Image 1: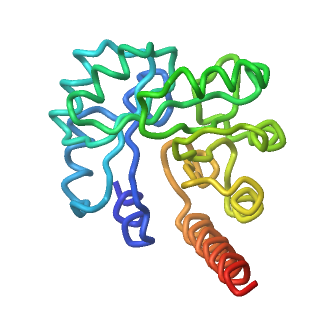
Image 2: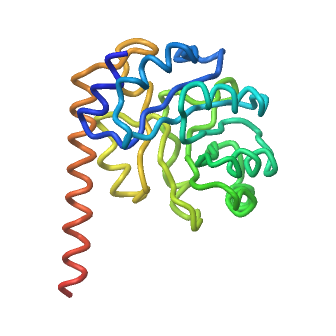
Length: 213
């Protein structure tokens, strides 16, 4: 519960809650409600689901006051559309390393009814939270008109390089900053956010240099 207020203090744009029972980071809706009550209205509350029944997603989202749904399974186009039509922002996870570049390109075009994509690391047994980065070269040639959130094995040591290489809209981190499953390390969190701010500064400087030229 102390992780969410710290993330807010460090100016996180969003805080995620995993509603997937098989995850070591899973949280019960009642506990999520208690944590969300500590967050300011301007912090997005993201619910992470994996191939969950739509009615269950809607029930949990309403109970917890979620505004964004992050989908990590094989959710269909119509499933995403139905949830989005109810006012939720939809983030669709795309697992890099599972499919060919052609299939990845197809998926990015196929899910045109989502608000953003999240690039995560493929693992045959895990639906996220692997702690392993994917080969960033596999994402460098992918093109989409939707914002891309970069995930997969990010930590305080590699996030600066990741941002400068792939220029994502945002970054998503979980296991990379943990001292144990479900518990973040405060020092790692502070270092991570410091590196993200450093990357933002570098990108702004690059942008100014281009304008001057």
